[in-house]
Length: 376
Image (tube, rainbow, N blue to C red; front, side, top):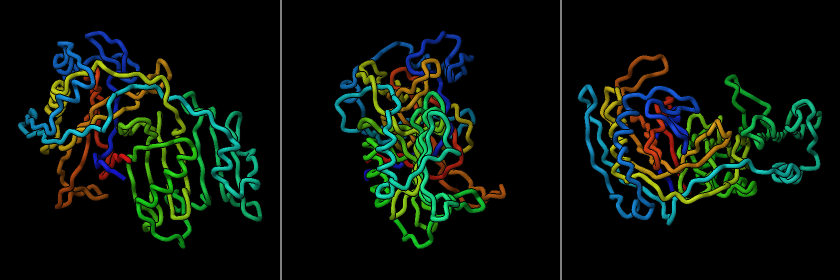
């Protein structure tokens, strides 16, 4: 599994929807026109000459490394010393995501396998357009396995899937208690089990956003996004409202999986009107300079990715090309009581910039310490 370790995650606020028109005095934020900030004005000025180039020219003129430096208003250093990472792709596209048309019988066979004939319709959990099926234990009192397809959850999730195996026992924190006899599993093995299941669901590739070990190493938890091209997908803390997947994996199987990841790529188009890379770096420097953090910031990776963006007017999710600048900051550690510790830890954040317009998908930390963006 080829890995790009990027970031901590982040609350991402879309500063402008891809392809939406806006006036010089206002900017579109999540479908609402609002006053431009000083950063918006500076970004508009940085890209105002209107220069656009094709993908081949962009690729041929990207340096292996970028070295830039600036200071915040408080004279704290912000520096880019980064390798630029692009996939081995000949083209760059944008596309629309469309909910997958699911076959309930096929899903039941995939998840319940040889016990599929034991699955019964769960009238208590089902409602119109959202069927649920369960297998119970011998006395029919405890849920053994359950599969739910919430096809009318909202307009963007006609294929929200939720599956759990022996998920009825919860601990005091509301988390599932798994079989204590399960052996320890490593991340690579867990990934292979997860991708095998997803391939059966016609999800051929994914971007792993975060992994974590649970139950003393017996479970690996994955946050993931469906990936439809060679380009990784930039993670989004708001992705539960758009596209996302979560899974817990043991040596036995995928124990739980849920989310709105049953999607297909539609209406793919080549993107040949891109901002020159030096303009993108200028925009990143503007964002870095306005950061109020008292700590020095280093950007040490730059990636060209896709970003899933919700167009609330069209009620559609689009994948748009975006540059991801990975920030690394050393901050004084804080324990759970709020007291300051005596050690520093690395915190990662990132700046995401629309590769066509130069608009910033602004971000700030949500408290995670280790977020990974992995490519397979």
